[in-house]
Length: 476
Image 1: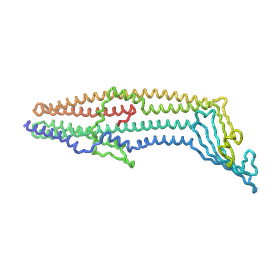
Image 2: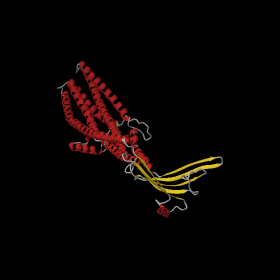
Image 3: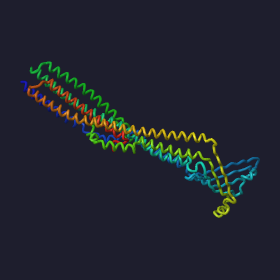
Image 4: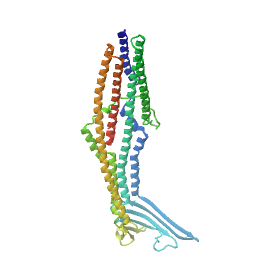
């Protein structure tokens, strides 16, 4: 009687095990790979879209600073009319062209009329045409504000690009962690679903044996307790799985910037990311690449270059502000190249000079000293940041090696516990074991598989953090 009841029970037991795995796989046919998920995040996530505008901001800043070298058309007019008299009417229009080396080229037309004009401001009735140059020969000769602004804007383009990479890499890391948590929650829920179904089949079989008189009633109580425990574990796994779906939905947006929800029928695809082999040589390559291209280091190096441009300007400001202005003048009818060459510096010209020089230079020297200290502080920050990055890569790599080794060991443990479980089932089939021992072996097997799932999650996460620590995208 005992063997007749045991055989159907074992047959059903193995059938439900196989059916549970197949049914779960077939009911959820759509899968989402890590690469596809990250690509979708980068395409539509608001943070990624915002980060992608940073290079455009830099281009706009460059265009803005180049505007300091744009030619300009200027007009000034002023008049006074009183008691039917034209007291005066001033008119001056000119074109000004800034030049990269510092001077400004200027050409214009001036016409002043009226009863009360001084000899200094009076012009012929047809007006005067003038052309000349304003050249700094002291301060602003080698560097001025407009050249410094443009050079700094060009450097800011590199800084904005580094900031863009940093923001996107951070977004990818956060999305990757939630993706791996979703994958872990899915496999835990699947495993505990199968475990509950096995416990239900076993409880039904034990009840039949109790009714048939082959088992004591207390055995059904033990099977019932085991089933209730599995139900609780499955419920908790289900909640964790649902919450992981919600968290993963935070990264999903449509092309129209509408939030999307991940369909509950979608399952994680086969994890190929975990198979990346990062050995000591690859880790050293990551360190060398991080020293060259890590966005934090690029940003700090660029910041130093910007300060150094400012340093050139501030050193130049220690010189006297000496500027020479020269304009050749003539009437429109007489203005030609011959008149310019024949009378330049002899007749028909205006010449001026301005000088400004603070005697103590406390303001200029103070600014220079503050900028020197900023360069020093930023270089120290660069040194420390580089060291922190290297240490972070090395420590994360050590965690990755540890979890990878544990995963290999855990796989062997799963194989051995599975061997023990199958052996205990065979003994139970032959009447040489008890339901308690089968349950014990099965609990050990399930715990080993759950631990394996947890270790796979840790390996995937630390591998993601390793690439992020090196300042690299996980898709590279």
